[in-house]
Image (tube, rainbow, N blue to C red; front, side, top):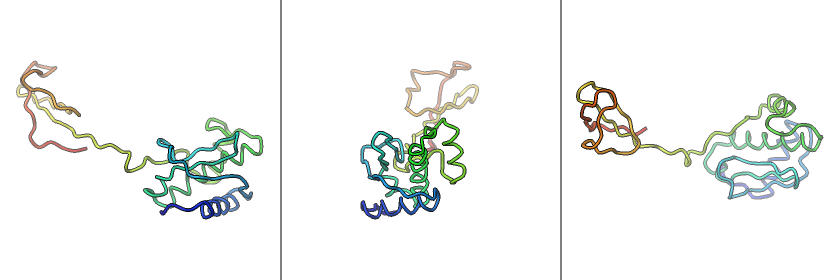
Amino acid sequence: MKLLNENELYKLVNELSVKYFDKPFKDIIRYNNRLRTTGGRYLPSKRVIELNPKYSMEMRENEVIGIIKHELCHYHLHIEGKGYKHGDRDFKNLLKTTGSPRHCNPLPSSVKKHNKHIYICRNCSRVYKRTRRIDVNKYRCGKCRGKLLADEGQVEV
């Protein structure tokens, strides 16, 4: 999905609000480049929804729509004076009825791939998987104290 300008974003959010909540969205929605670990957030004191622009650029449209619906659940419950926080029963019920996700999927760019180094004991054949390389001359098997052998066919997980 492409990054929408302010008018397009507001129009999309208002359409989703009317479609799923039967109420218009009357406040502010904007992108916030500082968001790192979340797809969006609702600021109750300012009645503002902020979205992470990386999700719009890296994820599919249905993921972004899910994030917007989730934030709209916070928004509409807050306006009505009901429980709008994640642990509140009203919030969980509204998520269910609107088909909104409870959490967003991690960004593909933020998922780190770890190089796994595999070591095998020469005596008992026990396998050790490590993120960091170890000195096979310094370390021994924890089970039988045998010498470790670095596996040449290292895997990337």
